[in-house]
Amino acid sequence: MQMQIDKKWLIALVNEVKNEINPEEAIQDEENKNDRNKNGVGTNQFRSLAALCSNAENYDEIKLLVQYKTAKIKKIESWKIEKNGKRFGDVIIEKSEKIKKEYKEDTVVLEAIRLFFGYLNQSARVWRNEILQIMAGKIRRKITIRMIQEKITKIIIDNPKERRNFVNVI
Image (cartoon, rainbow, N blue to C red):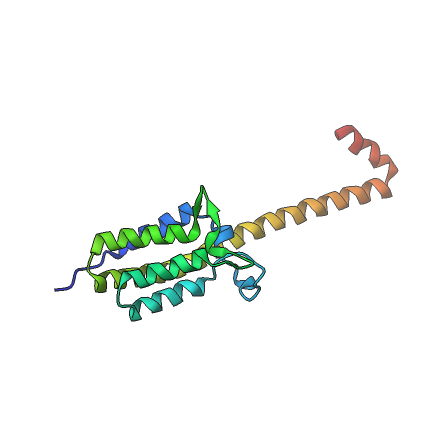
């Protein structure tokens, strides 16, 4: 009888990843996914890792691949992005080790890690969307402030009498 995989626990592990990395840096923006000069792990890499779990014979194959991605020397080293002294790839290995410790049997471990990478893929897309919404709000505020500044400047230039009012306020 095959062991039941606790999917809620796997999702909790994914949420731990979010807290242990900086999603703004570690997860690649969809608009920049083809730009090799941009930092961030593309979410499709998680989907690829999930697919590899289906073909792997044991956990060590997946661990070695993540270690390779973390050690790989490239212009942009996404898997090496750090937060609090922990590299992104090391956080993923740490969570994978927890899964291995929990389930022990290779086939169950690989299925659990496959699910973990699938959830990580979905979550990373959500995280990027949240970040983009926050950034859009900041941009809107900057634009609004700039528009107000331009209107005040126009009033001051067009109406010299108003200049005194603004100078007195400031």
